[in-house]
Image 1 (spheres, rainbow, N blue to C red):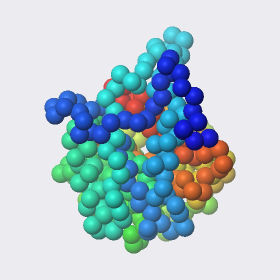
Image 2: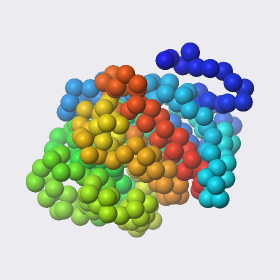
Image 3: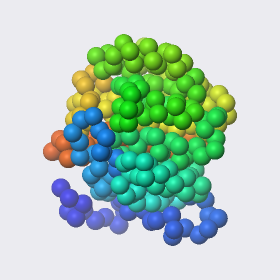
Image 4: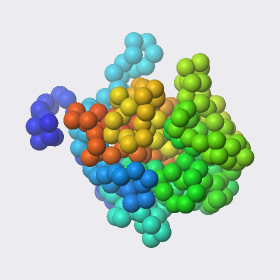
Length: 309
């Protein structure tokens, strides 16, 4: 079902179709900016992830920018009250020149917005997204990943962003990796994570502890130096039943609700300046588009988090 076939109801608004930041008056604060960084060329798996930002923008139209009241816990709210903009896509963001363009685009977006959500693309986008958001505050920055993998491989690929950020100057003791899974890593990379001082929270720990408690710990560790935090939501941390469009997702991963909750809780924290959504190949999704729809809902959850600040 394409967005052209969606019903029209004057009492039911739809998300998406946000204006460019250039349409917002200088000096006026932007709550959230969407920026596409469609990396794909260095992926370890064959992927059409470069097509994903456009697919997410289309999927946003299925949803309303409305937060339903949860009895006495939360009140009804509308995301339409936020100033949300869409800065479009960084052209050809792979390679040294492409990364430079993505870093500059992130820096421009972060300068005006409370939160920038970067749409991948594969996980290679995490490097320019984080570096652009941190700017000259790399020495105090923190990183939280929700990912089944350590992403500490050698070389330049979607399997190396965490290692590359450490080599750029990010302190390993301010990195938290949530959702690391069995049968998805190697002893060498597990040892490398320990050597770097990374806090690793295994997938099974999320069965023993409330997710909100885990996220609170992660935010405290990543923010212990008082600097900006980047959150990498690698959708392949999810169970393959809800994320078939992720080449590396496996049975037994996180639920869709857990990923959505992580997006909202982390985005609500004032130190979280940027967040990326990665590893979704829109061209390999299920016929019902469930992976892309989950990604779109995470964008809206992030906006809901900003509304809670």
